[in-house]
Image (cartoon, rainbow, N blue to C red; front, side, top):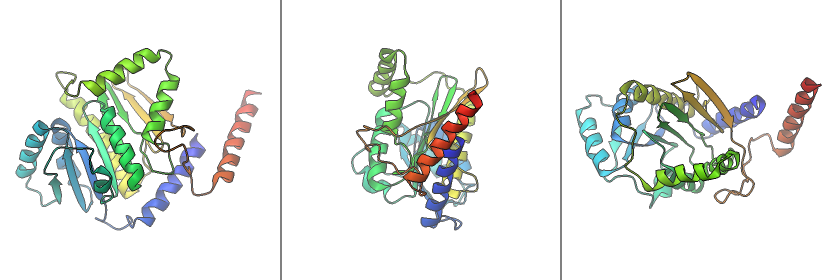
Length: 272
């Protein structure tokens, strides 16, 4: 999987150059977030050499608090707040104006992620996501349309790996129906740590000094047990969103197949 990740990194570098993002302050970001995460994110976002950050608040309550926070910022950093809270309608057109999007929230919002995924595929706009679930921080997958698995592929892979599909479906249904449910009280240190991981991924995605950590894969940190895991997300062959037709790398499918074959051969040699 390291070789597959390396080829995705090369693809990401070519995308950066094609978008002209090698120039300082040329990148535009759409950030979808809540008020608590915005409190930890916005001031530090001002330290990144981006051209523009547009914030889409999750709800009306979040919108009011984020608006107040932006007014209190003394920096001349080009940051703006959409006039209304996040809405799926017209999202494809909105995303086409930005180089990338980020969904950074206190908890997972699968319905919102579905909308972002569909819009990103239409607009060919990369995006990443970060959320908290109790003491767990989940980053990614960072999606490069047409080159990595999409979010719907990721969801399909999650379902297929679950030994208790009913538990997964119950959790997913709860998150989709209970939009206001949160772990309370929120822990400031955990929120700040999660925000730091999200900021680092945004910087890696748009500035390219280091490769995105979650490019084509999910990265999880268990802050209770001090564990970390990385899980590569393969395109799902019958994905309803993208059809599993990703060109995982610009080197071509034949060469990619050879890479996979070599990895399999190495694994067999180690086993023997």
